[in-house]
Image (cartoon, rainbow, N blue to C red):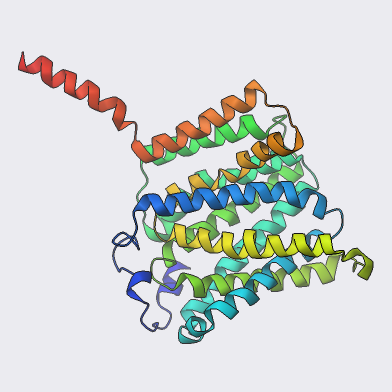
Amino acid sequence: MPELLDNLGGDTPVAPEDRAPGALRGAGARSPFFWKLMLVAMALMWGYSFFIMKDTLDSIPTFMLLACRFLIAAAVMFALFAKRIVAHLNARNIVVGCAMGIFLGLAYAFQTLGLADTTAGKNAFLTGTYCILVPFVSFIMAREPLTRFNLGAAVLCVAGIALVALDSFSMQRGDLLTLIGAVFFALQIATAAKYGRELDVNVITFWMFLTVGLMDTVASLATEPPITAIAWSPSLVGTILFLALCCTCLGMLMQNLGLAHVPSSTGSLLLSLESPSGVLFSVIFAGEQLTVRLVAGFALIFTSIVLSETHFSFLLKPNAARRRRSAAK
């Protein structure tokens, strides 16, 4: 598939601030830390959205909620970036954006189907395993190098998410479906990381939103009963608008922009903070008990990020300095 997308027709020039061929974009304008911080902020935002969506799903079916979120987000993106979308209206942008949308739509579908046959904690944990899958998918798609630090950090992160989210270690049908969803999340992240460096992120994000919105609309019409007009309370509408504008439009745009500027393995690791942050917000706002297991899980996740970002070089440098002083003596 990457070869097919790479061989599609050319594109009109992308603005210099949006593209730097042969390098991670934005390095000359903003530091890599800025883009990593953006991904962390987006993960925290999505973690908070779990807390909000829990009650919302009692009033509106899942696919209808997702359809509303992504169609509203697509409309907002078109209103903001219509000139860019028209300027880059070609096969490559459309196919890349739609491919990202298909991956994301299938990821949500399998995650939702899996949730029906497993616990919320296991669903969150198994979804978070995409941070292990992304380095392998990116290596296949873009020949992005695999390092022992990336893989070690991913394993530590998944272990931390397990401590935070898991109540048992049995495997059910829902767990398998959730794992399939994690594969599609990994494919979406790797695709955004590869092509976001070459194409206009705003344009491909619009096509991604539109694709997911249409997929969920079809799924809702086929599998879910319509909701009555009385169910559309001001509170429900306000929640949907918050999810659509902040968590979907702004959040996914932040994700795709961040992934275009950092290695995909690092990006997926930072995005995996979504699962533990959801638990953290439950502790803060819903009174969930903060246990030793949760603290240990958060510590492992933090350690995984430090390993990925520093390779623990701050521990090696003092030892190297001592060796040099000893040799000088």
